[in-house]
Amino acid sequence: MRPLNIAHVAPVATPVPPPKSGSVQLMTSLLTEGLVARGHNVTLFATGDSTTKATLHATFPHGYWQDETMWPWELYEMLNMSAAVERARDFDIIHYEAAYYPMSLAFTRLSPTPVVQTLHHSPSPAEVKLWANYPEAPFIAISKEQARLLAGLNVSSIVLHGIDTDRFDFRATPDDYLLFLGRFTAGKGVVQAIQVAKRLGMRLLLAAAPEAYYYEQVAPLVDGEQIVYVGEADFDQKVKLYGGARALLYPVQAGEPFGLVLAEAMACGTPVAALNRGAVGEVVDDGITGYAFESLDEMAERIDEVFALDRARVHRHAVARFGIDRMTDEYVAAYRKILAEGAHPRSSR
Image (cartoon, helix red, strand yellow):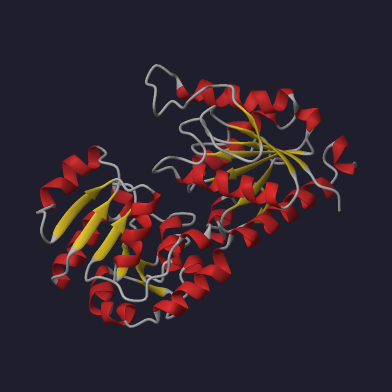
């Protein structure tokens, strides 16, 4: 099959890939580079300080997370998306990575080239009802759980996230601490992770950017000895934290459509102790890479089972399931499926 001409539209909050946090930008980068490595012609619509082997189209030199004068942020996102649609005839497909909501839907009937969107959060029923104004617009879901939430819309394919498993160093023997890594929000369950650590009498390291929720709800619980805040981690720091942990705690309170930190920890050989919410059951293989528990009590009572898992097996399983090649191949298949459906004139090219 001939290579595809792909417009990949990133959020313009940060560079691609992001210097620290920014899972949507990270996934956009991994997929972009995977597509280029497969021989496809990719134009990445992102900020000018992005790094890529694709052709970079930069409407803005940097992102709005770094420049408070870039307001309203929605307009910057829309103009970045518009830049791709204005060149629609150069591409076979336009893929929008929706960090907040799929504003790309507005271009569904205006673009001569198919526009597909990937959503990176769990939508509410009200959101799905609004998006149903474009029932023909194709989505590529990131889990079965997200596809379920998108019921009634055109979920063309489901592709689980991938990670660059080669960059996550396997560590057979960890240090003696637990790890929470993720945004400080009520839904992520950081307070619950602290409760579990205190119940176990174990040291817990917290790694994330210090948002308002941290100062209001988490900081009073940090004592610098048992509960330790280590700040926001860059990639190298993150890998070291994962590898040194006996387990990653993921007591998520609000169901999420994937859970990237789960795959990252497992790639280092670190098993996960998670609550069975959202897509956790699709990412964690019970008894192999971790356990999905029904309650905090069960998590605390069975933590020794998590520690007993074979870290080498955890690593091997994560590499097999979450590598970039698998993700890239599935996205290409999803693109070709959309083109084969013949919704646009260019789909027959």
